[in-house]
Image (cartoon, rainbow, N blue to C red; front, side, top):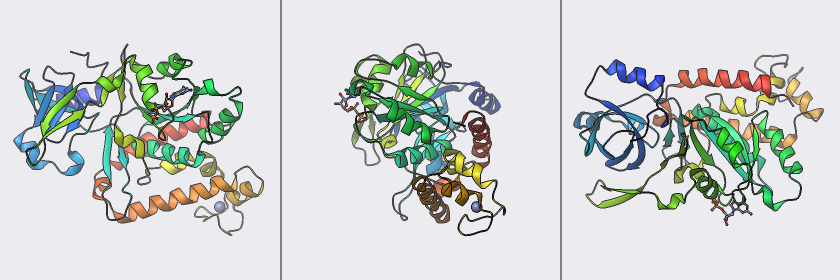
Length: 354
Ligand code: GDP
Ligand code: ZN
């Protein structure tokens, strides 16, 4: 059995467990979601199912996902999940269509590595999108520039990344040669939960293999039954790193979009948010208002027109998502995220200046 601390268990969850006053329950972490059977880590049983009461009460938002902490009755064989503990962070994929529902992708991820590769043009607009989603989840980002073995000079890539990273660390790695992996590993402390996001082909699987130190394709699978009683197999998505720390690797993480504005847009665009503070009017729309500091910054070239357009686009998406009142979003404890974002933003202000 794995030490709970290495799996990311911390006072935030321990306190909730204590408050349940159920000495018969132990904590466990969801390692994979298999429809009606959940793969568990940190307890004796490797598989658990929901208690009858929980199944009856569970709305979609409260369905355990990979990364969640739960309180289980553990007989060593098949555990019964009695409680879902409050999430510290929640990564949600925005619905692509206004009629579709958003989807919870992973819970309690502390840090996301945004992976780009040095061998082709990377899309800074997409990186801004990832950063916004990460800040909105309550987690923090690091930039991972992979495939540095393919270029003579990484400086142009680093410079382009730094312009959107705003003080977020940029780590240069090669999953092929192993260069920089130790530095990346140093960002993932013993109790830290880490996720990799980025476009297909940038090397996320290769990096995961490097971090795990073996081929993660060969991970255990669980068998469960879906709603129609069919047997299904589920790939384990929560992987323990040697030396402690956890890597979450889910297919859903690869198609992240934006959700609502928990402050993520302003956190990802701290330069624009900061410029806007100097606008003459507090409710300045940055169109043709007199004394607009944002338009002045664009005119002066401090903020590029592309970055400004990207900011506006993300803001529009966020507003339309909010207007749709997605039930998944409504259930989020927004106040808590905002507190986290404030801390993130304060940090960005200290370190974020070029
Ligand atoms: P994913 O889609 O993001 O998971 O990317 P993969 O890990 O599947 O990698 C895509 C391709 O890039 C594969 O052919 C890898 O062998 C290759 N690749 C991954 N990392 C590196 C690297 O650091 N250097 C080089 N030269 N190739 C890499
Ligand atoms: Zn303005």
